[in-house]
Image (cartoon, rainbow, N blue to C red):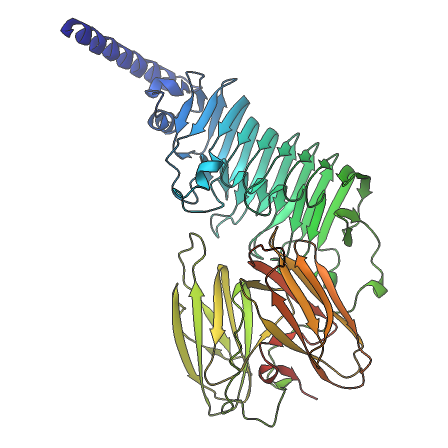
Length: 580
């Protein structure tokens, strides 16, 4: 027995010294190539060996086919080639990945990295992440790339992640996008949220990729281009020779609703791409709904692209942008002036031009309506009318969503443009603010809650909200009122959900009669239009948002107004209207 143990220890010592010698010799050579198994591969837990190889200073790390590589999250470093031997399997360790953003391979703020898969498999355990043992989250990704430059990923199958197969995003303000990225010959199969999510990128090529069987968390697309903030970008992107098939959402989604007039011009080309049997359609687009006011800002080209939806087949070749969607398939057309009811000019914040709807009532003394205001995400502009000498009191409830850890900065501006300094709103608290109105007019309160939510209320003054850019509302069943001025006959509201999330919307006239209603509105922007017979007078209409009738949960939805002043309130008495 003792002889056997002594022999085993001696063998291990010889192996360790042999590996150390091999590592030292390899790192002394100009090409600095090492094998990951040299660093102490163990079948049950290979994280330390693989991470040590990556951190060794090698120019190339070969993940050799020594056996299945069972690992926890791996952090990659700059200036390195990761070559995975043919038929190797890298598997997420079961029982690990407890953090909602834990990803298999992580590239954060690095450059000059190549992952050469040679047909290898990166496998996670999606079903585990949806079990009671795990906190729900949609960010457990196969390959997580944020604010990186000169990255190539190729020759891999990425399967069953708890989020995206590959995520391209923004890790910080220094470079809030990924740049010079190539994703080639990759299969993304059965991932929960997307095959590939592109949040912010410049000079991106996605080529010869297969994006299949996405199901688990909306939008559930093959590829989803979905920036979170206006300062992110989608520039010089080419998707070539790709297939999106059997995804629960769309094949290819472009979602620009978080962009605005400050965003860098968008350019995306689909070249010889196909979509088949995707539940929500082949190629789907939700634009920032003000893009009509900025022609030429968005360029989407489609060259020999094909989609099959419900047995219908179409081929697309166009240099024009997308102007509409029908039955999940694209329709292209030249935009005609008659196609669009012109948007009124954005709310300027000029207190001399907007006044309370009931101007005879003192806003400082009249009690605000008890109707709830919406929970808002991404950005908001609250409008509050006060007279000189009044004390304004309002509350902000800033709630955490996901892994966010931040405060909410508030930008408060007087009618003449002077700033009113206040402390940021803390996370997961309701904070009261107070200031003295030094002049009469509209005060604006702006904030960027991002992926968190903000809800405003006031005991002293009525609150309205600007919707000259789309308002992102979260988990709120609300009615919002708006003015239809004299002389306006035709107008409409556009409503859409985020990804596969849905909402019911009803347009209601001043008598409380339903004029237009649509249930279960999802990614496809729906136009709730009205044509008035009483266009000779001012009227206050409402749009009512309710839970979807199909039983799904109400979460993110957006809406904007066309043809009427872009201001809404949760009651008629709270509404600001243009001064006559």
